Length: 201
Image 1 (tube, rainbow, N blue to C red):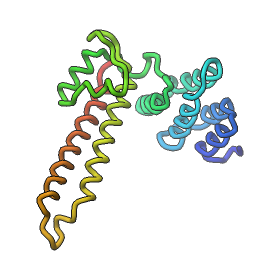
Image 2 (tube, rainbow, N blue to C red; image 1 turned 45 degrees about the vertical axis):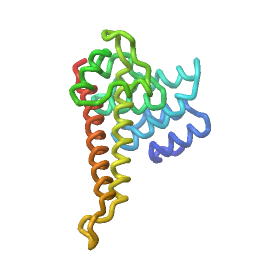
Image 3 (cartoon, helix red, strand yellow; image 1 turned 90 degrees about the horizontal axis):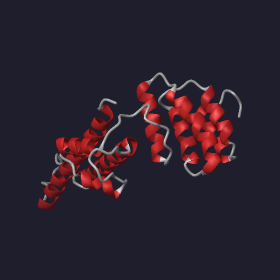
Image 4 (cartoon, helix red, strand yellow; image 1 turned 90 degrees about the vertical axis):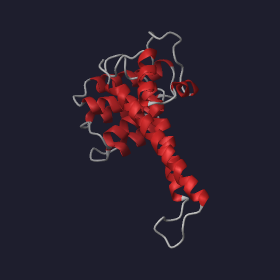
């Protein structure tokens, strides 16, 4: 595509045509930033996650090298997490904290969430001192937080306006209580995801 096109449009165009090497070159040629460029890299990662063998390596490795060289630590971290959602591992221990199952259990206890919920979405080691998939744990934590946030929002929208002319009925009060519970769950899981990232490497 022409030089002045948006990076997301250019990457999407080449990805649809199966021209992933060209899509990678487009990403490498643009200035990294947290909006369109980040979305473009996520688009490449999504397609890369479906590849296998040498085809995957030829796309994954150049992206990984680019991400490692990013001067913005927060952007580097978020690109790695976006890729992990697509099943692509761009971190070989250079970017995210090195955490063990003991760390995960300790942090889960501190923010008061059930660490067992992780096992529904990812594999955890059997020994406390074995490393965990930090990116995977953060993605799962954020995903569960978003799940509860959406549930809370849906409940709030189902209740009439408390300032309206009619008093809330008992089942409305219960829905508000459940919404508040979902909100707290969302906050706790979000706090856990943040705590995992904030640990020292």
